[in-house]
Image 1 (cartoon, helix red, strand yellow):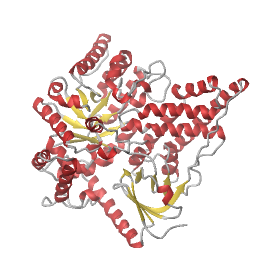
Image 2 (tube, helix red, strand yellow):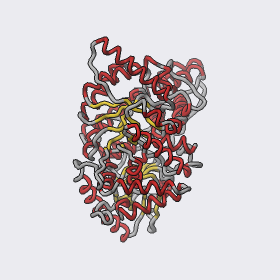
Image 3 (spheres, rainbow, N blue to C red):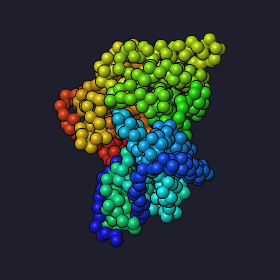
Length: 598
């Protein structure tokens, strides 16, 4: 039964925009996974059951993929790539071989074997420092649940969603669920108890520009089917059963926001140049070439971070040089002549196919990223050769992750030179390309002046830099409150990096979440960051702030911030300054004129 009084919940704004509609709750039927011991005679039949379930799961995902592809909607190609990743996970040795081992050696039924195998993979992902890879645990859950449901003969959760216009409320949604909801049923928005900005569901919502709020925690316990719901994806707000007056207010805000978004998009082809003539480059963080159209539509001038880890995940073998090459060629051709910064492998060795895996007590601080690549020269060589070969098809920049010191950077550059020497000897064409590093460790920030003498550019990975500096895991709810991008220690490190880059003539970019938050734009201008890389839809508003700001005011703001003591004081000063200079703009009023800067 619908309630009459309004309830406001706060979550994580995963995709901006305001939507108003009727609630359609999706009950997530809990999978009760049976556990039993097999007799020796039952083992082969149980292995056959597992194979059949894997095949059915693949067919189901292929059907969903086909529907998405046929829709030809914006973002559909990106969505098919994510579904393809789930299909690859159905063939992953870590999942399939482990489940088969549980059946053969432990004599466990297939359902329980799959549950154990997925738990093992999830634990490995949990130990990664990067939020993006931690969020892949949800992908493992979705795939494992699909296999188990098919073993049990259960139907998927998304079955009876009305054709259009509802706001879906669920505990969580898989990329396959999201495909049906957004492409086939055309829902207005969605809200989930679980999830994060880096979940694949959130990534798809942003690509399709569908408002979404995730990580609400208890929305399924509060909202009933048929309730009126307002979703404000920009502010992470969900209002259940707003009063008629509140609803009218949100309707007006939505219309104003839509008009404002059109005004922002009108600046797509204008430079991100401050009033005192400083130009910054606004770039995108992407994982798939299919994200390029959305990036360009929002005025992206480059790719500041192209993740390559998807090539290694959910498979039983390593990608070969040719597979690397074709992927890199595709992204470079799609963006030429714009710069594309491709980051080399940035996972722990525990995510690779059997035979290549390593275990670590703490993978986040262990053998991962450039450390692992230097231990696996053949794997690294294939990626570096492919990158150099692809360089002739566009404007490539190569970036090494998790560099902790000069010796590590020199070793990585030596591997790149060896790959270049091989190609030159073979008569294979390639270009000399800029080589840079992710500055995401405090050690790298502290010796940024030395590292600047050894590379062509810096890219600050603020997500990891903040966590390593403050010593927290922001996914841990008990300490997440300590995650402060404007902590004085972080601010000092950012200044150290930018000053070192400027002194050496090495441009500094930023590709962490901090770069896409408009409230931080004036601070980053003041620090001297030359490129800000973010998701495509964030670009227009950041550009609006840049074009209405003065870099000299940013420098003065940074000086004031460095004289403060606590993160709360610094945040308050930044918010007050932005509210004064850009009244209403950062609250979704995109038509607001900057104060005194019409």
